[in-house]
Amino acid sequence: MRKLFSLICVITLICVLILPSLSLNSNIKAEVSDLFVEIPKDSWSRAPVKTVYLPITFGNLNAESDISVISIEIFDKDKNSIMEEKVDRLLKKVYAFAKSSDEVRKSLGIDTPTAEDLDNAKKLFIEIDKTKDKIKKNILVEEAWQKLKYKPSDKNPDTYTESEQKLSNLLYTKWIEIDLTKIKKDVEEEDYAPLMVRVNYEIDNTSCQTEEQTYLFYLNSLPTRTGWYPGDGHIHTTWSDGDSTVRQRRDQANSFGYKWVIITDHAGDSSHTSQARLEVSEWLAYQTDCNNAQNVYPYTTVCPGEELATVEGFSLPPNSGHLLCYANSSYASSYGTCQDLINRANSAGGFGIIAHPYNPAFLWGDWNASGFRGLEIISNQSNYSSSAVSKWDTLLTNNLQGIISGSYPKIIGMANSDVHNSTYMWGLNMNYIYTGSSSPPGTNRSTVYNNLKAGRVSASSDGSLAVFSLNDYAPGSVVNVNSGTNNISITVNAECARGDYYSPGGTIRIIKNGTAVLTDSFSGLSITRSYTLTATADCYYRVEVTFNGIVGDHVEYSYCFVNPVYVNLP
View 1 (cartoon, one colour):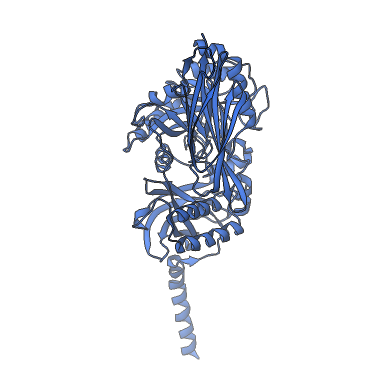
View 2 (view 1 turned 135 degrees about the vertical axis):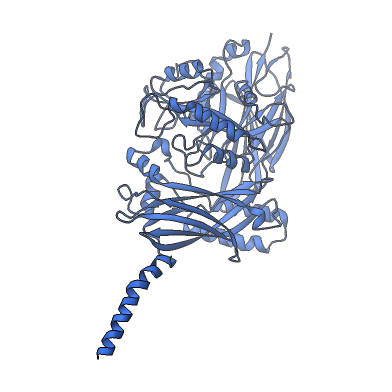
């Protein structure tokens, strides 16, 4: 009996000494409830850049325990290790604002693919792997990508409540850079790669793991046309309420095929607020950050700008509105009237573009304000703002004589992503600027600013490109035309960026002084057409091209708005 008792004591002592260390070092494949982890299924890049950036967002849902993310491992479809990235990050607790992953997503407007979307995508992958037809495969790859994208949401950091803003600030996003050629040596123009992501983390020093399937996509390059270069003019970073650094945004933009970006972090004033804001004391460091990101080969123009606000948070006219400040050489502060924001942008050596003017959360409050240079007609949208387009035409028509004479600035219509911490519309809403050069702007920021101000712009909802010339003059031009019959020759060229449209086609609309004077239909994903019209008085012409096609069981659209050419009849 004594021997048995001694044996029990020895076993007990061994358990006390050994089991805690076993618990500390063992990896438990846990059912994740304390860890918020969001891994998108649709990370992508465009040819020829074969680098894909995968954002993974984390938060601690446990009110009591500490959670640290230790590392992230990436495996290919055959479970071969591709890479492991150390993280060693203690997560902030979000329990006061969200008790579950679903609550986090609901609060922040993260609308993930549905179970049906996932099932349909898996069926498409099976079909992709079987098909030998390259054209069909390209269509299927892009269709699968569309299935796995985040859904549109009315929420972004601009519309968050104070509680939602605090929740967003507590989350941590890690961007993983993945070289597609390490996964697939024969990467084609349209391709996909299934991956397994393993997150190694600790809860109160107990090691855990969670794994999740995701997919990387490699899409066709953007449409190209000599002298036209794509970019985005409304981008947020960690200098305010974005989830990426300036350098990360530059790298992401490069992988999307962009040639220029304008960083427009939210500006504050001399007093800090509850929301993350770019302050005057940070302006020089902000500029340096943009300079360093721009001096990376292959060069992508990285311009430091700002987004100014009339008030902090939600507001209504006349005390509401946001203004993008471009080309400013000094800091411009927020808060005041709409006219105050415009004056500050101009006084800082820059110019202003009205941001998302018809977003219900911050309607532009004063259309009598003067001195701005344009407005967003597409902002974080899969379509466009009809109210903004209508207002654009009104501004153009009312100020036509001043624009033609040069006494009033051209009014630019733009499409921007307003990217914060979501992949939705980042890499899709964009503007092509016309420089006339066979080389992109590179490190020459004035090339971006000057061509924007000149109205040499084509705004796009998804990367599709439309351009037109009037009597061989590009958008933004003022063209002297002799009075007579058939004195206007317009040539339209357009190419769709979508590769998943079945039965593709579209419509060309030529707008004269706010009224459609010609509508023409076409089939296919690219079009070149010429038209002869008559102008009997001073006017402007602009062009809209809409592509459409069947995707699954419904019709989808791509929208292009080309800025005007102005006609002067002596």
